[in-house]
Amino acid sequence: MISTDIHQAAHLLKNDAVISIPTETVYGLAGNIFSEKAIKSIFNLKKRPLSNPLIVHIGNANQLEDLVTQVPILAKKLMEKFWPGSLTLVLPKKDIVPNFVTGGKDTVAVRMPNHEQTLKLLNLLSFPLAAPSANPFSSISPTKASHVEAYFGASIPLILEGGNCQKGIESTIIGFENDTPVLYRLGSIALEDIEHEIGPVNIKNFEEHKPMAPGMMAKHYAPKTQTITTDNILESIDFYKNKKVGLLLFNQIINSENITHQEVLSFNSDLAEAASNLYAAMHRLDRLNLDIIIAEKFPENQLGRSINDRLKRATASTNTSYVFN
Ligand code: TXA
Ligand code: MG
Image (cartoon, rainbow, N blue to C red; front, side):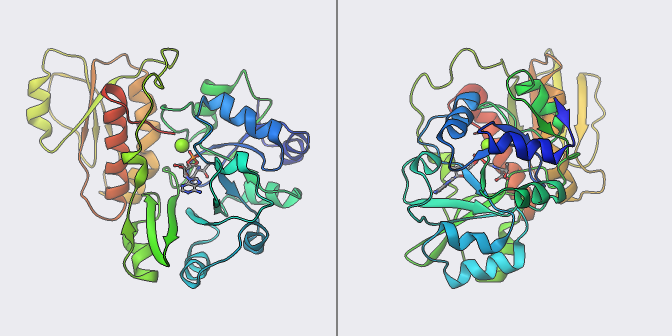
């Protein structure tokens, strides 16, 4: 059920339920970090491997010190600049943070989301919320309540309606290794903006390189349209001219008779606008029974880099092993 009732949402969360919450990045599947029952059902619902840790969401920056043993000075700088917001910090965890949330790691990923209702909800609770994106493992992340309903409507008691996610792609994840800042995932804060605050960041973006066990892409996943990215959109259209083609474009439509559907992410060439429209456009294209989605490569700077990262995952997930989690 889609609802705006944060008190009902709080009541459910206090009773070990999993519900969907809006954030400024994507919708999450949320549960009490201390409830093994809730956290287990998050993993079950998503069909996500238990070793893949969850992000912990707090309603007040002061709560960070309840969860982690140390906050490096550069992390403090980032928090001051970007919280509440789409920056996730990976820091050494305190014992109080359950291993079932962190996949057994000795670090925990934490962020304070920038979404009015969800901040209100978090502040009604005496515990933080673990919330991965509200999509089955290897599916497109949700940026509208209706996306979550299509995935999980029958399996969760409540989807908190919070409108369209303004940022539209997941948070940027930063950790520290030997005091050096490390980027684990490109996201809705541009790398340039992070480096402007704290200097050079070592890029790991490790999800890309993470090996997947064979068979993890189980058959019961919904079929997804094959997706490719290209630097040369016209050449690719020509190559697939006898196919049912959908286009995912940056800033202009293409004049061609061979196209079934086109999605333009920002006619103003605004990368932030393009990011906020990305997943909804991918959901629409994926519903059209196309033979192929051809995505234009974005400029490799600012949020264009984060968009290219997600396009690369979409590309890989349909033919090899890469995934959205
Ligand atoms: O924008 C977001 O971050 C959204 C919204 C709902 O807040 N959440 C989200 O969660 O994207 P999820 O579970 O789909 O992605 C969590 C990512 C995973 O790639 C995971 O590997 C990484 O965070 N992560 C979590 N804990 C970590 C840790 N201790 N060290 C390194 N990476 C970690
Ligand atoms: Mg995810």
